[in-house]
Length: 329
Picture: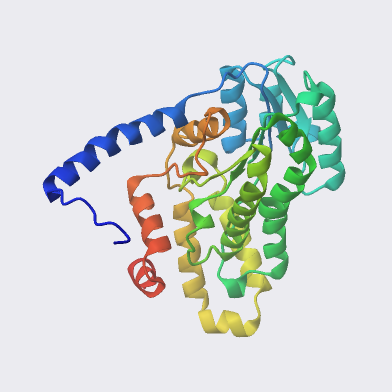
């Protein structure tokens, strides 16, 4: 007979055997994934190091023994974050001017990094695409130019820098780590311009990961939850100014249909949101470090509170109508 019948084991014994085999296997896989590679002679380029996650990661990896190339938008303007990194010394901390939206600056950054690698033939171990901005606004209050501006930094900047440095990463059989967000897989009202850019980062990461298997390059997406209180990526002052520009830029019909009271109420909630979230960035730094240093990193890391993790699972696994009813209606 084909297929042959399964042995008639008692269900309890089968379940016990499965558990006995599965638990050690899971522990072994976890240990293998968490084994770290030595940081010595490993160089990493990080974009967006003026403040926030990028600045903290540059300091963190420098302290771990990595050679860090910290790309800063405001270096040529004497930005505080860039100057603080410069004071860490020139041996393993290289601070360079880098606007991820500027092809010329990306090309100059490539030449700068390649010239300062200990052995350019061995390539660059890691690239962390961290540079990004946050945004908000109903679709009808968000201009096409704003969609383009946010995507140019968050998405096209990631693609632009990755394409430039990919040959060096392939030589090292290294890592590309893309800073995404929980809003790269979970949509929210008033966040369409940001979600569009981060959903794009997720798609780019998935496609590139599949292409890079043959080269031995790991491509990782890191998806933090709300760390606005720690990073200051949104401020009440910035929200107020952006709100004023959106209201002035909307058509008379849109302003009449939504009403100023509704618009101001949403703006007030966004200002409150600017003070929310986790203040300790160590979960994100741990995820980024493991993505760069683990022998077998995960494809995704989700540093977030349990409540946001559950929301993310619900939004991505429940039927769409039910997820919308739970979190939007």
